[in-house]
Image: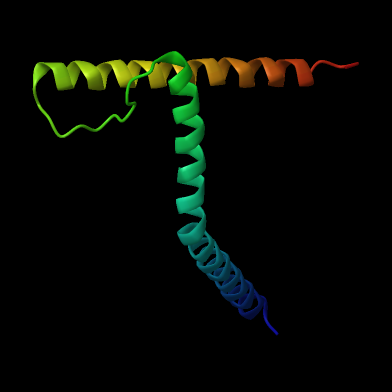
Length: 101
C-alpha cells in the first residue's frame, strides 16, 4: 500500500474512535448529569445551610428589591463557599506536592 492510503486509513480509524468515544460520553452524560447535579446541589446546600438558614436558591421569580437582595445574599454565600473549597484544594495540592510527605 502506498503511504497516502495508510494515512487515509489512519484518519478514518481515528475519526471512528473519536465518534465512538463521543457517543459513549454522550450516553453517560445523560444519566450522570442528573446525579452529579443532585450531588452538587446537596453538598452545596449543606454548606450553605451552615452559613445561613435561608433558602439558598439563586433564581427567584420576584423582581422586587427584597427578592434581588436575597438573591445577592445567596450568591455571595455560594461564592464564599466556593472560595473556601478552592482554598482547601490549593492547600491539599500544595501539601501533596511537597517531597518527603
